[in-house]
Length: 397
Ligand SMILES: Cc1cc2nc3c(=O)[nH]c(=O)nc-3n(C[C@H](O)[C@H](O)[C@H](O)COP(=O)(O)OP(=O)(O)OC[C@H]3O[C@@H](n4cnc5c(N)ncnc54)[C@H](O)[C@@H]3O)c2cc1C
Image (cartoon, rainbow, N blue to C red; front, side, top):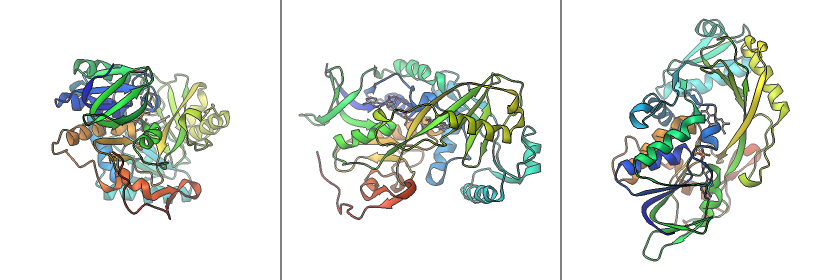
């Protein structure tokens, strides 16, 4: 099968689904290809937290825009995504953690976010379920969460109603230039899709995809986050909590707690060979920290765990913009707080590719895919600039 589209979107997570939806509503003929089911990877496995407390730098306005869109899914997605308002609190137990928390939160305050830094007693007034041991808190009144495990169904209905051609359960395996201009995507079932433009929204899997388009060995690594869900219990906290750089936790609408962390998981290069196993040590450690922060958690037991992963770049910024050296291929991947940002990222991408003035610029230097040519991972997965960085961008097709 070969069909011609204005754009083909590769990867049906939150970023791909939202981009496809808004581009189709803007009048483009869109195909979305997803190798599994819609939003079954990171976008369906995440903790659902919508918070201004986690993101940094140029991502902050995207987080604020995303949060606002989750509050109105009935309007733009045609269904209830289980959104609930809840304040967010990040807490510190030691002077070193408090120093780190204060430094991070001042940056967010300077960026105009409504975050209050407070002592332990005030934090407990705001969230009485917190432990006496908390010495500092950062409070965001406007956080919340939405249900990631049902979002794929909502997007499927909305995309179908908007006329997007949806190919689920089939992977894109390669790309080549189309004879009359544009690109041909090769699919695992032997079919092909021709499109004038391509948008890659396949999270860490964009690593091999960028290579299809001539970007050799892009510095992208994967990292697992493990989630734990407990038995249901009486209402114990209302806020979404984070213990500085360690775990996040919340009590959901049905009384269970969801606790997440990346502690103890190695970084990896190939998502399909990662052999990601459950780590019991992570479960024990996360539950200990959780009960330290919210003593009532000692009353409940772990019900199940699962995990998912995300792609990371050396500077921890996403990859958003045109792929260097190739015409009409774009990427949006490796996004921190990607669940929160998803709908807004898709809306801005659509506005940009439709040639409209986006509500805020998305193709900015901090996110530019071309910067990857100059980077690699240094010690402890920090940014290292490459000594052999090419002076110019390779021209492919
Ligand atoms: C456990 C966990 C907890 C998290 N918690 C939060 C949170 O509380 N709040 C928050 O804001 N963010 C959170 N995140 C981050 C957030 O979930 C992600 O940043 C976001 O979902 C990424 O969306 P995406 O569309 O880029 O990627 P994904 O959802 O990973 O989608 C990429 C898609 O590409 C598809 N694909 C791959 N290869 C191919 C191919 N060859 N052909 C076709 N399709 C392909 C995959 O199957 C996948 O569906 C969490 C992440 C994880 C893993």
